[in-house]
Length: 113
Image (cartoon, rainbow, N blue to C red; front, side, top):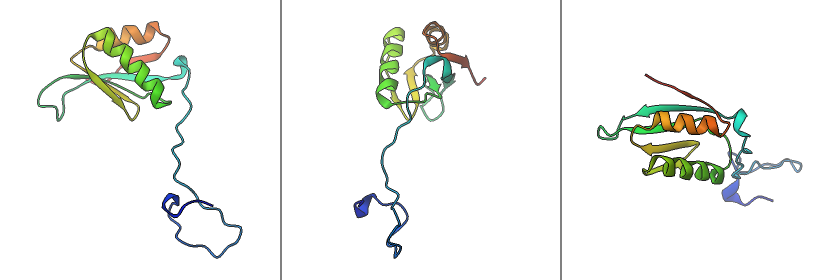
């Protein structure tokens, strides 16, 4: 039986066959690179005018996202972060990132203006 804090939307049920939905972190499996649909864009909203390269659309485990993020940050020689299926790299490195991702077999394209 699920702990009360893990239950979603149901407080109590009189049905003896009822099963509670639980709040478990079920991350999607990491898709292989040719099935990933990554978008690379330049963003400077709410960043005090600083530019960042944003790679979005990654589907998979956070560990795989961190690994890809680390290799992109090493390639560009700059800092950044990775969370919620997005990778932020400080500075405008769209062309480098696009060429790297395509060479690794990812389906990637530039997006935005």
